[in-house]
Every structure is written in structure tokens, then in C-alpha cells.
Image (cartoon, rainbow, N blue to C red; front, top):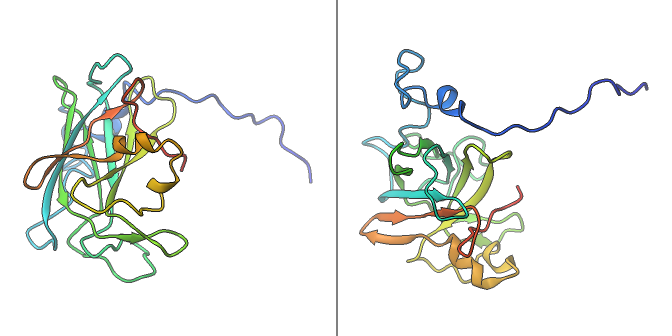
Length: 201
């Protein structure tokens, strides 16, 4: 079989500054593409589970807020079932399980209104602590970054992923801060002393 050596991989490019135009046009005041930006709403009046708000800011290595970051989250429903093709059963039809938000142009803060997820199994069958998966893009980030947010009021001590982190003092970078009842802050640090643990997935 002949190899196609004339088609080389192109170099990676940063995600911005045009990522918002394509992914969240209404946020950019570009109307008429979608009635609402995809991923803007995750819940409705019939969604099961405890309603929560998750918010945060992406910071660079100097501690400066990124004002052009975009964050996507993916999570299980209140019963620990992921929407679409979960072999364990059907997920809550009133919960999307996926959301996308851009950071505020002035502060960089992003906010999701969602529900508290249930526990899900690790590939080997052990249960993971409830968590939310996050994907972050912005100018200067060549490949989207993956991380997780865990809850400070949950038992995270035996989570299969958290226990595998070599430097256990960095586990705290994956634990949200509860600001008020049902409101969690999860700031993401790209570099520096508080650098968030990122996952190679």
C-alpha cells in the first residue's frame, strides 16, 4: 500500500480571537445564526436534581484574568448517567449534560446554571466522586485544556483519578470553593504557584 507522504499535518493554531464568533455568536452580538448560543442552557423546569451554579475565571501565569476564554462543561445527570449512549441506562431527558460559556469581556468570569451530578464509575468499576469535566480554550492555548471540578462537600478521598495524582498537594486545585448554598467557584490557573491540574484525555 502506497503512503501519502505529500499530505503533511498542518501546525496547530491558537483558538482565538475568532473562536467566539463561531461558537457563541449571540454573545458577540451576531444575531440570526442560532436562536440561542449552543450550550447556553443545560436545564429546564423539569430537570431532576439539585440546582447549582458553577462559576469561575481563567487566570494566566501573572494572575491576570483572561477575558477571551471559553469554557465547556460535560457532566452526568443527578443519577450519575451521561446523556447519549450511556450503557447503564437512559439519562434525564430534561438535562443536556453539556454547556458552553464565554467569559465576561470585562471580568473574564463564566457562569453555568446546572445540577449537581451523581457519581459515575471509573473504567475499572470503582466509583468516582461527583465531578464536572471542563474544557478551556483561549488565545495563546494551542490545544484545548481538560480538567475536572470536584465538590468540597463530597467525599473525594477514594476517587480513582484524584488518588493517582503524583503530587497530592495539587489535588486542591481540582476542588471548588463553595461560596453560598448551591454556588461553587472554580477558578482555573494556567501557570504559576496555583496551576490547575490538567488532564491528558
